[in-house]
Length: 315
Ligand SMILES: [Zn+2]
Image 1: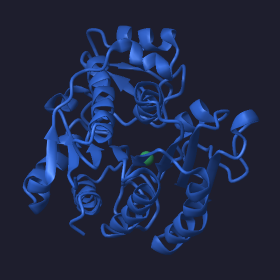
Image 2 (image 1 turned 120 degrees about the horizontal axis):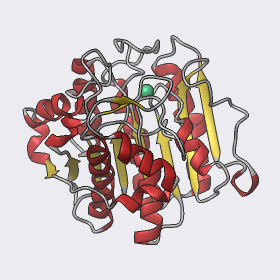
Image 3 (image 1 turned 135 degrees about the vertical axis):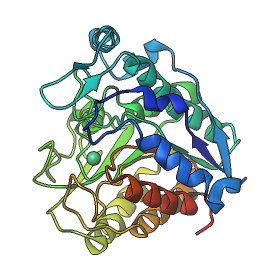
Image 4 (image 1 turned 90 degrees about the vertical axis):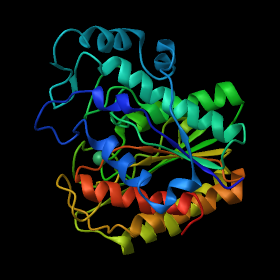
């Protein structure tokens, strides 16, 4: 079984952030169009998800916050936080569709329909806090996927690898005291959202199960390779995950408009090799990758293609 699932729904476009927002409604569609036109097309298992049950949100968010997002997705576009996170009339349903996407990918991998999977969804999720929207994110899909994999499939240890250029403060917060989910992040620092210091390593029973690698602006493959080889790989070998989830943002690319890192298209292939090898070594290849950031649309689509080529064994 060497197939990679590509999970996508055309309604991901219906979460409307407004005309000038970097997290534009077209992001997932443009990625999907490029992959569908590429040579990878026939190596992928194309899946269209359904909405998750609303209560799935409450695996990682408070009931009051879930209802707030539901009610905010009313007649017109409203801002959910002091930043730039919006809800439009369809946003709640689209966010449930994004959760449905990661759950479908986890099920497909666990049931052996595919070896690994990529969820081409939006909005992103890793900044969403248990009780608040943040950083273009409504619900933390990857965190919910980790809980879902534990509850539905009985997995014990989940490794989350977050190479988005921003620190995934929401994911870190949700699992900060939890030794069953290891959170690893490389991120530009100091930078938005300001969290992710190297000495933030977890708390209580979760102490030692968060590994932050803050990197100054201007870093490229040399620094990422060092972080993956010398920090991620040994930590993963100690943790021995049953499933790997990837918060795959592509905004550490040199041409991304929001950040200042220097990765190139093909560097995402190398990062993918590291995580794929870890999945092969520890959990029969079980890996689900979820789209987070990436705001230069052409660069995003190209970088996802590099990522997918490695996931499906074509590079
Ligand atoms: Zn980001």
